Amino acid sequence: MKKLFAIFGNPVSHSRSPLMHNSVFKGLNYNACYTRVHLLDGTKLRETFFKLKLSGANVTVPHKEAAYKACDEVRGFAKKVGVVNTIINENGKLVGYNTDADGFMFAIKEFKEIKNVLVIGAGGTAKALASRLVQDNIKVTVLNRSASRLKFFMDIVDECYTWDNFKLQKYDLVLNSTSAGLKDDELPAPKDMINDILNNTSFVADAIYGKLTPFLKQAHNKNITYKDGADMLLGQGILANELFVNNELKIDKIKYFMQKSFNL
Image (cartoon, rainbow, N blue to C red):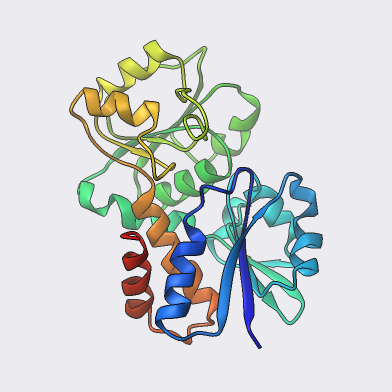
């Protein structure tokens, strides 16, 4: 029987995930296909998953924390951060994982020695990435518009700031984990603040992929080495696909066909 997988998100029409996973399934003759689901209400995730008879799913903004709540069991790193981006249907039981964090570590490898990171935003992606960076003894500062979402980070990272009390330092890497610039021309923080931050970093990354966001444009104008979320997307996608196929396919083969999909 053909397995069906999907990505839940809002917005979701821009997602490359169907192209990536279908490239693997087709290239390796795996009997499955992958589609998009535009989900407005995260609390309907579980119900929709079963209605569509899915074998597994990926979850993107803004539903990663809702995905955690939708699961019967959460394993590995996702358990630590309360954020799920990959769900597997195990005999009618939803099991949640997080492949974002390791996907991100895969993406920043080429930046070499990273010791001090500023994460802009405090949503599900920020939770996963900040927690993963801390695991590798990297100093992390989190900057968010409001204080309410910073509670999670207080005990984990070195410093937390809102736009009102932000203290600038030197950073090896600045990461935008917000959706600013995905569908608009917004920056993830006020323009002057972003300008000062970019003048004090070596590298810049954006979790958004497939477009030069206003944030990355600013980095480009300042000749800062930057990357969008494409490598992170590839990294998390390879790990998610491995879970989807229950390790039946070799990871180097998954990587080969998934990488190929980025040329389509």
